[in-house]
Image (cartoon, rainbow, N blue to C red):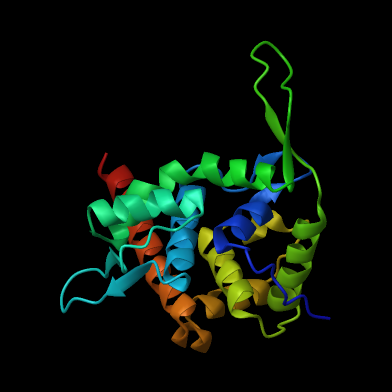
Length: 228
């Protein structure tokens, strides 16, 4: 059984964040640096697919991200990223570092606005609001699609391939075992999607560039920690 149809206005960053939200605990899997990195990669894909940015491949150095045609996206979470890139074109490594930490709250707010999540009053001394699942239909469809692709090996749509590749790159698939049963095959299929033939598409090229930037950022972070 396949679940290949995404809403026409679905963003990769929306679906990635919704999958990483755990309705059992109200937490976001990989919250912190892993989440920042993959959200930035997802926004890059969404901007490339919408033809709002392009990737330039210099002879030396990292791929550069530049805006296209001066047309600002209407979606606020993409518009904010576009503004930053339009103000100063940057390489993909810098884009992940600059945009990643700014994306968590706007993306989760967007999921609340769209009725997928809701905010509940917090408990205890500080009463910090917590996230909970509202209408779980979209997330259940996404989980089913990811199982089709990663567990059963079904061919994915471009949209679902991008989401699955980013889930794999996040390093959090094993932590999502309750939704997507973890196995060596799931690991292998995820890694294959990160570098597979579907990357001949525009979205796929963005995923591959995003993966390279995520790896570079993670290596840089690990090196900095070891140096300390």
